[in-house]
Length: 367
Image (cartoon, rainbow, N blue to C red):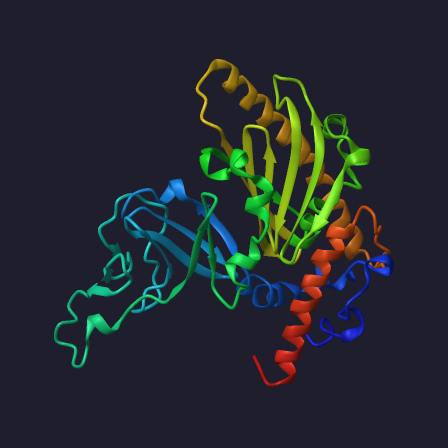
């Protein structure tokens, strides 16, 4: 870890002379633990859509940086997020998503918690001296609903208002994300570090080379990328046939560190990039569409799903090739294109700051 956090690559870099992160941040066996502690445990993470938590007792399970989580609607007005780890002997409170639960019961020994996380029952513990169920509760983490999406933070994440500042105004009432309906999820297991996939997402520089189909729909000359404090967004005029998206604007938001919102006319697609190891990740795509049960809408959705899969498979191939290049021993940090890779630079600067904070924590005696 000490060599990974050597200061040579951690100093802030101006965009016009910036280099990419060195290969070791994508290949070093210690990089996964560093990212879990310095990045994922200190950020907002997309976990689900509010429609999955519509009724009291509805719940979803997830994991962030190795910490199992359980998100539940505890009453009509409240969402809560708990550690999905029983306070008895670390069994799982829930193993899968569910609907309408009246309590949360550990399947290991049957300890049962209320929807508020307080222990309500512990079989055969009545004779244990000084045992007070009301004093035992599941650890709770921050949860925030926004634009129909649910985020959680397990550590000291930025204020959520700062995290999404300006997005609502940019979308406007005509493009509110809350009105979409969940359609389905697709996942891709990719043999690359999670940051390779994010880097690739953050620039349209590769579109003419890697995505001929997508390039035919976008106006590359008008493709613009802008950055904010905690996110970046790319947008381009869109020229597709009425049988796909029609005309309008393609808008791609990246919310640090691993969430993407792909917004096209009539469609929202969310991406989560989940680390599985230093050289593996899983990318989960959730598709949402404007309510429309017509045959024409169903046909457009089918074409959208097929086209999305085509683009993702092109991305998977190049990301895996890049990971091999990073691991080859040949690569030295390359110069970024200030015009086309400003969002990559923005992402790397956020990572450098997180890594500097982690290095300072270690110097001052932290774990």
